[in-house]
Length: 263
Image (tube, rainbow, N blue to C red; front, side, top):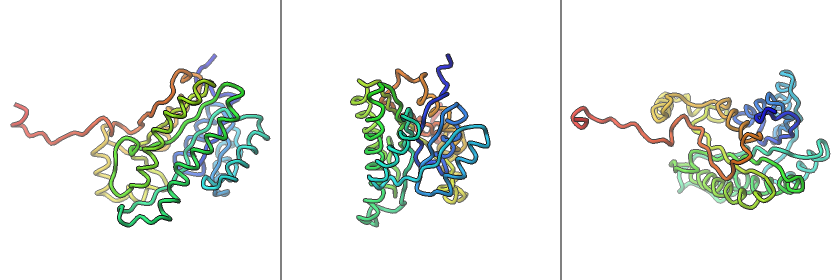
């Protein structure tokens, strides 16, 4: 038996239309999972599904709004009706608004919190209710570098991702008795369609690359191996963990140590 295989598993990937979500959806399909690709944008989902199927995989598009509780409930019911169960949930959908704390409005706060934390919280709750009677399941949340370290001008996003880290541990404790493993990946600086304009700035890119031990920014494909591991039987004794996929950013900083100081 290949303990890394996802053959026959049903995986739900939120925010699957682009970026990390799409990369992971395609990767899980390669490992044998049937992937339900969800987001609010139908055209992006259809493109993702077409790519998966063209490569020989199996997928379904499902429009779902993480900020709408009724949409989450209907989405879970639709997946269970179509496939009988949910084996894997990859909680990837998220949003961000980059601005100083003094400029954050209540509307901005509620939108970011609603998608990044409230939506993730209640979708996990609904999916876990399907997993519990079968006493098996994998929930993989998406944190961030800001799960463990703050960055300026993304305070609300930072608050949600810090909460996702702690929520992952709480979910692992409560769902563990039903053999459901809950972990989080915390991506580093990843170039996606949402961040490519920021990283196109030469000063910004030079700063980012200089802070990463591997000397390069990440890609959605860099996330796939760890997620596939956490979704498979190979991780059956791993739960409550936040795994940083960051090229070494959280390991620390290089510093410009002068020659005199090294003597």
